[in-house]
Amino acid sequence: MKVAFSKAALPTGAAVIVPAFEDGDPTAAQASLESATSGALGKAIKAAKFAGKKGQTLDLVGLSGLESVRIVMVGAGKRADLGLLEAEAVGGAGVAPILKTQETSAVFALDGFATDNLAAGVAAARIAFGAMLKAYRFDKYRTKLEKEQKPALDKLTINTPAADAKTKFADLEKVAAGVALTRDLVSEPPNILYPESFAARCKELEALGIKVTVLGEKEMQKLGMGMLLGVGQGSIRESKLVAMEWMGGKKGAAPAAFVGKGVCFDTGGISLKPGPGMDEMKWDMGGAGAVTGAMAAIAGRKAKANVVGVIGLVENMPDGGAQRPGDIVTSMSGQTVEILNTDAEGRLVLGDAVWWTQEKYKPKAMIDLATLTGAIIISLAHEYAGLFTQDDKLAEQIAAAADASGDAIWRMPLAKAHFDMIKSEVADMKNIGPREGGSSTAAAFIGKFVKDGQSWAHIDIAGMAWNTKDKPTCPKGGAGFGVRLLDEYVRANFE
Ligand code: BES
Ligand code: MN
Ligand code: ZN
Image (cartoon, rainbow, N blue to C red):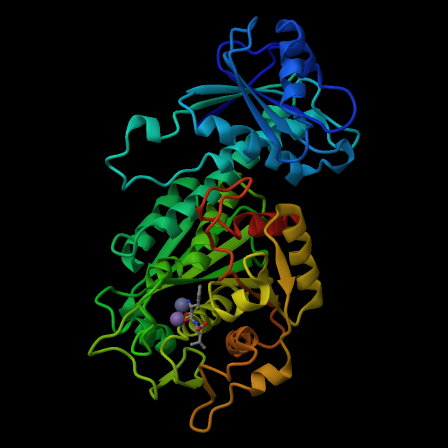
């Protein structure tokens, strides 16, 4: 879907989407449509009891007096409640009914859509952003869909007199592209997206000015990454480590580092997972997907910041050559690990990836993202990602980025007790703790590979990487969670 901006007062031709507030006077756009239809629009709104409530929509066809056959009214709620995220939701909710039709072009009629808190240009840009996020589709493997089963919308025009709407949208469009890339990556099936092909997708980001380095198993062996390699040793696919560098900031300034868990498929290994639902483990690379999408967003909008993204890519398979429970492996840090459950593999991948990241980049701050534990879904459902850090300042910065971006997080405990719970009798640590506090001990495990004084946070996104339900700015499926969070974090703290 292409987005264009126009200053025309009355939309012509295409379907029209009109946001309406719950309180105060109708917008100028609504008023002009009202008179163009000789009052029919108002009558229809009244008859349908459309009150402008948040998320409410009314799909009207055939009102006379208009060139446009279709008008979609969309509720924007109370004026005082309209913030940036609410405006995005208006964009998503407004375009949603259109996506179910065969309309090929639509116009958002935004003349007069502004509040005391939210200027017209910003509101218009955010509406366009929300509509773009909502219009995302992943149907490349559906070869037999009839034309009528696919949305036809390919042009969305934002009608607003605000002169700055288009420039305000320019950065957001890049962020939307980053979110779409992440959604694509988590949606791809595991026979198509495996470490090598994932790395190839990262290489494509060189077009944005990102420097991409790919390490194979030989190089990782040399570096001593026994934890990461142990996870991948049962797979016929070669494990990879990808580093993506965007150095848009001051030369030599320490970068922000994002590290992602990229388990392209997680069977559990020899500690095999049960069959039902195992297909979901295709998105066990959601952390790596988020880091990759964030790098695309940050480079796409040419952020004046130094940022590196590092992803550990493996496939966790059972096999004659696979890692066993009982194995002891040596990490790049030199610490040894007793493997007690081969399904606790993400932390093994991340431990070596975060160690390498620190050695190579000496980052100012390091944040890892991972679909790490089922336990975080028990704690936080599909409402928040879990944030684990002992750095209160970093926690505050991430919380602020979460509020601004809508990628919701909730801080969880990470204490000495959790580190004590992964002590081993035979090695420096074991890769699982007791059942209790499973997300915190997983975080503590990664923490064992964080150097003293390094600012670090871990975000467990197991409950957030995949949507089983439609959301206002996201269709079912890959959520793209984390892209906006990391982008906002960079914007607020590194630019
Ligand atoms: N990838 C899973 C965690 C997961 C579960 C993500 C459900 C998304 C949805 C992870 O590798 C895993 O298997 N974790 C185990 C850890 C346990 C063996 C200590 C878990 O959560 O059960
Ligand atoms: Mn696992
Ligand atoms: Zn996993």
